[in-house]
Length: 68
Image (cartoon, rainbow, N blue to C red):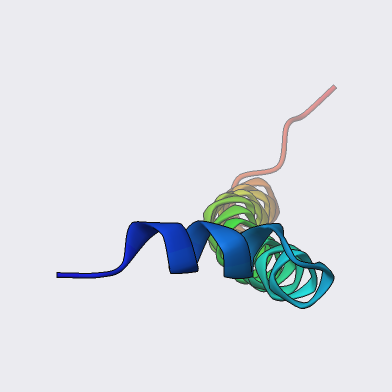
């Protein structure tokens, strides 16, 4: 299939090491983007729900104020 010796020789050369490191950095950056997007959407949805509940409670309090 592949010439393993040539592949290992290329990967152990400075050019191959640079390409390998660049590939790892690109994959890590893509993962960071996906993780950030996931966290934003999860906590953003929770925050919107909390804001909605606060507004709903304010409306309830406005319609039926507590007499103290």
